Image 1 (cartoon, rainbow, N blue to C red):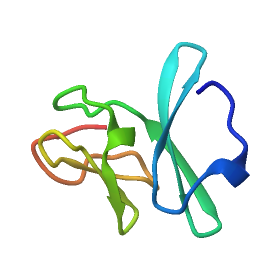
Image 2: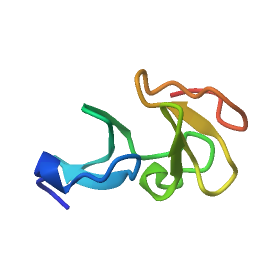
Image 3: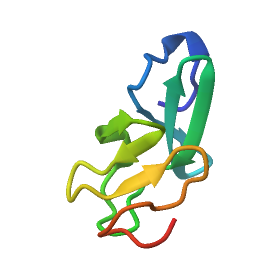
Image 4: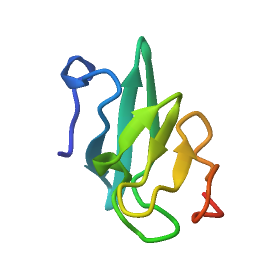
Length: 81
């Protein structure tokens, strides 16, 4: 997906957006929308395929979590954003 209408976003369901050669994980939580890099820094898996809970997206491959508000890794095995 290269363009996104915010009305297309389902609460707590991340989607992958491709823009200028970059993959972005976009997630709506209530009336807020968050965008972080779509790649897990541990395994390079797509974060948009993961689950969202408490403002965090979980990598589906090994369970690393990233804070959607900051993009920072918050649980191992990922250690950086």
